[in-house]
Amino acid sequence: MSLCYSYTPNYFSIEDILVTQERIPSKFLVNVPKLGKLNPSAEENDIKQGTALDLPFWLADPLSFARHPLISIELPRVYKEAYREILKADATAVDLHKLGLYFYELGLYVKRLDPRREVEAILLHTFRSRFKELMDFADDVVCDPVKQNRLDMFERTLFQKAHFSRMQLKSWLNNSEMRLEAATMVINHKKRKRIDVDDLF
Image (cartoon, rainbow, N blue to C red; front, side, top):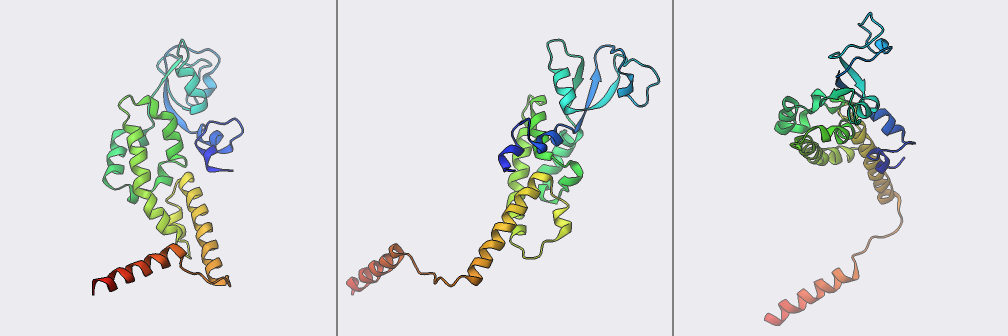
């Protein structure tokens, strides 16, 4: 599946389904009858007003943004200020896999919960900081599994595609019988430079 589906809400995208399965902190604003089973610690059949639960995003989002919201939702902890400061300090040292399998993609969903747009900024900063290291890692012939385990799913997809392309290029350079020659434009440029220098003397 192409990378574009990874960031696009799409009914047939397995990645999108997995992203929206991630749970986010929610608080019920009203009493909800017959849904006590959503709270494993409750003994009653109803959910009481003020009950705090972690609900999957696909369920929490429509309940919180309806005309009459049933719940209020907040940013998952990995996008809150404490974690943002860690990522600002050195994003390359962070194990994104531990923070969440779909760090970037879930961040794109929940960024609207942050009116100051700091979540959006930290997503961009984290990706920019880690991209060069990710591409350098993809150039290695032998892949270190410890490094791979620190990547979230989007970074792993990028790494796999980059590493495969790099290995194909190396194989072609080693096995190709075609002789690489300088482009005509480069040859003519060198000749022109030589002539210009000769004219000076």
